[in-house]
Image (cartoon, rainbow, N blue to C red):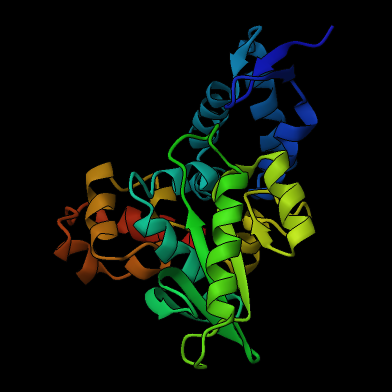
Length: 272
């Protein structure tokens, strides 16, 4: 009989070792390391254990195996939650993901539609296509973006699509979240022609896959920086670990000289 575990939204499901192993493989863990992590997790697995506790156990084992870059990559989803509590750093990070895919990006743009003014979280342009993006950030892993958000975004970008001048006009509106969408939100978006992008939606082209392809990692994934140091960087709109790979910048933000080599080494291996 399989052991039931508790998901972030409170629902339960059978523990799936293959799912854990796949997430470790995506992070770059070798077959030997994957086997050790899985054995460690199974040893401590309890009925109704939360998926968050399972993640923490796997993460701790990865760090003890001296594979910090793998541990950091494995923690990317949690690292994105750590961009909060406001959604502003997430908007910046989303812009970096799109830049990694060849888009020209602006964040926090004011545009005027046919009927009303609008604040656009991310404006992206590529190959003549101009898209406006609403970034819906959740601090809670169990949080879902629902149909109300989809209806709101669809209405906003229809107004901007009808803007009288080209400077304000957009071709598409996207709704992007760091978690998941409700079934009703997905159903409506598919019917209305609204593009959704979530952590694993669409299934073959979700946010995680785009992050991996663009090779961008939030600096909050680094295990060698303190939470206070990460917050200082985020406050200055620095969201990528590859952006802090200079000793001078780390020293400027108060990282002690004896710790700088370790931070640089992890950042290089994670982002390289």
